[in-house]
Length: 292
Image (cartoon, rainbow, N blue to C red):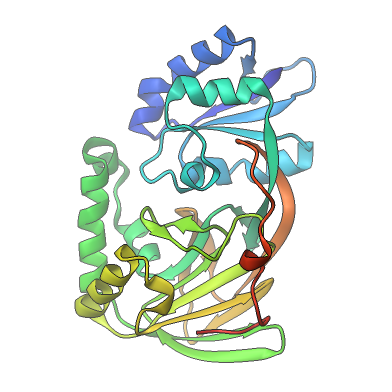
């Protein structure tokens, strides 16, 4: 198997373990090459990094019609948790070498592909506040500090959301459009799946630190969808307009600004992952376009 190996050069763990990933793949009979290397056609892309590094390779994998393998070296690693990809480096490489893969949905906003979630509001501000040098040096602690600063200065904004034949007018501090059941580093939604053909929009109403802490507590107790002040909608596409432009992040990477259209691409991508059962009927949603 000949693969294009992509290592995040900005990642502390990428710089530390990139050579080990290459050596482990080679040991298992996989030939890793750089993106610009000439030669035979590629059989796959392997990403050694986090969700953002993975997301940047989605369009390339779809264009080449090859699967993507993931060796998780990121901070949150939501996609690996969602797909049960081993966090152990050798085990992740062995999974890639086995050739075992499955199809998942991907989402797109403003022409940018993502696998887990795209957001407007607090999480986008967190991303902007993070300094690469601090993140490389302090890891999760730097993200936590950015989160506290973002929450402290969070202000609600108005968003008009259109989906199917419905419209919703929201005043929110955080709007997330998720493709996966696991996102944000610690959020898990039981009735969603990365292969169910749906997007889920979550909007948190309220203002400031107390609202964020209340919602955080509900999320930790796995009641996020039903927490007071959390509105949820499900559809195959959402159009979002705001009174002024707001920046969007998708899997932690910049993805333009509002207004924006979010859409699902069912079963558009192959990934090396343990075989998973198709999304169950229970995960496929009840009344279309409904909300809580």
